[in-house]
Length: 340
Image (cartoon, rainbow, N blue to C red; front, side, top):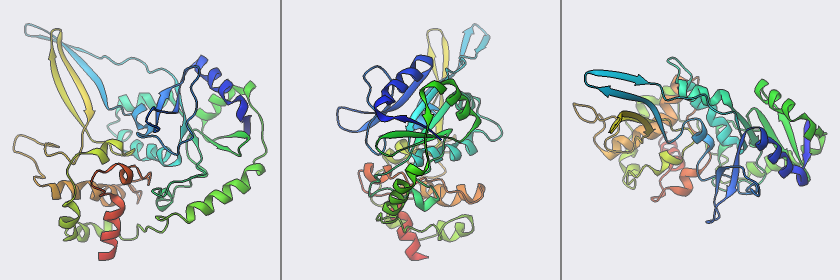
């Protein structure tokens, strides 16, 4: 295991940024944190999590897919993609680091999404362990160890040094590139801190939330539950939950006419919107109840049914803190679990 003393961490960031783009959580003026490109003077945020996840780096909210040049009856298709820059994302928490496993199952299966794949190949994920969880955290419910996060490299701190553990060949290559800034570290120094943190997570209010009532084998019973009507009453269909979720992957594709031709854009969409998946014959889910049920059935039933039991939620707690109606996946799970 390698380490860097915390008083030299800014020097490390500067070194990485001189070789490739580096992004990390920094504090905003409103006190919340967001990922930004490192510039001189940037300070790593001490907040637990960012407003939006690191998903944005690989599946951005909007992107130009292709251009069409039109001259008379002739149409020229222009691939606007350029090779992505090499970049690193530092400070990704365990919940967000796990989200890439879920997104990979969607975008890297056949047919592979080449836009996503290109960014994944160029990006290095450097995760950061959690020591001070929020009451809204419940990542452990989905088998995530917040003290040992996934990623190409996982980091932990004992308050004096930052320890780096290499997990993938991509991470190994990154460490070799900056080998001169590291020194050998004794992992034994971290064990007491990690054990303390795990005990803290065990005492969280949502630590005992159960997934036993969910999964593909419960599909029809859950789908037909009368509880959906009551649960969906508070939902206003704003889509906030989907836009801050690190695992939501729905999108829309639209063409826009310009003076030079046509641009085709991809942008995030939400299953909570009335026009989501609307086709010539109409919308397959015409009521808010149906749209509300779709979101949570996908996370808790459809996705695990198709992916060896892996749920489509990572317990980051963002939807608990941001929903204007205080309706979230935890309330849904508890309500349906009682019914079960």
